[in-house]
Image 1 (cartoon, rainbow, N blue to C red):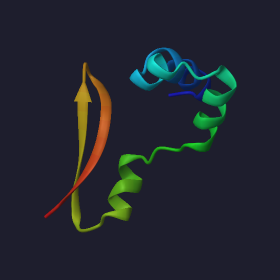
Image 2: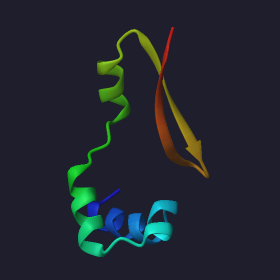
Image 3: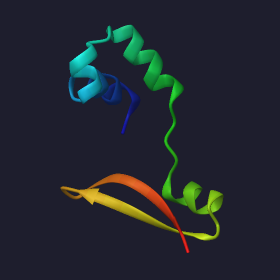
Length: 68
């Protein structure tokens, strides 16, 4: 997801954002510091594990590595 969309979503559509109501500058800084791994990167990091993609409503929700 593009960074500008993430910045708005993290403040307005996450439990953390709703409860703490951080300012937009803090949310922007946090999003810029984070980088999520792709499924290919997960496979490379966890070579001896099975990598699975969890989906919700047709969208990728999370990527997990399970040890064999």
